[in-house]
Amino acid sequence: MRYPMRCGFAEGERRKNYAFYGKSDTLEKEKAYPSVVVLIGSKGEFRMENCSIVTKPALHLIGISYCGPYSTFPDEAIRLQSEFLARKHELQAETNTSALYSPYFGNEVFATYWACYETHPREELPLPPGMVQFTIPPHRYAMAGCSNKRIGEGYEQLKSWMHEMGLQKDDSALCLEIFYIDEHHLEEEPVELLIPLKE
Image 1 (cartoon, rainbow, N blue to C red):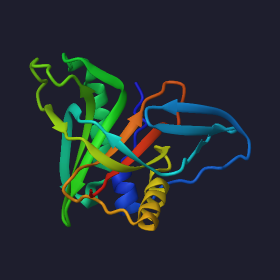
Image 2 (tube, rainbow, N blue to C red; image 1 turned 90 degrees about the horizontal axis):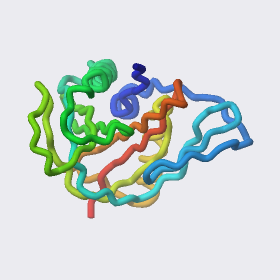
Image 3 (cartoon, helix red, strand yellow; image 1 turned 60 degrees about the horizontal axis):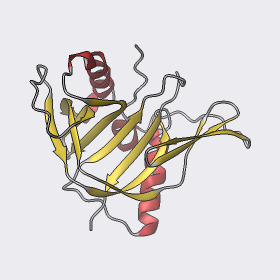
Image 4 (cartoon, one colour; image 1 turned 60 degrees about the vertical axis):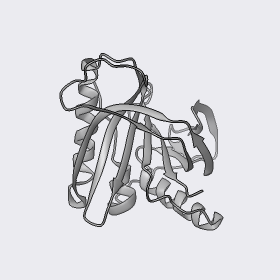
């Protein structure tokens, strides 16, 4: 099993140590995912798509979390995602394993980052040790699509677009990263970056 995830929260917010990949003028393929389109160029690289506003319904999630100082990111977030993916066989509840959800929030000292799958809201099966089930209420989000290797660039584009549009982040709500797992792409995975908006 492979674990290609990267902690975009830490890269985009704190470290900005992302990599840039070559771009091609010719697009060979367009691949659609729920509410995000990722374009793949002739060299297999992912292209960023324009930012947009999306509305997500309530998300019922099950997963594990890490809380610690910013100096421990992104290493601990990557470890957390890898640990969760390695434990997915423990889940008895019906889950959607095609996407890994990583909600997060932070303050001036530390951050909490999650690795989760979406689950059925009415499942009442026993939870594996250390796992928690919770619901994120419906929200409007500013969203950008990118790849797991261009998350820092994605956050820069998204925040610049929000500033131009006069959109404000809802600091009381969770930000969210959604990693779409596709076995056909070993190096890069499509990602949605979502920042909750004030009404």
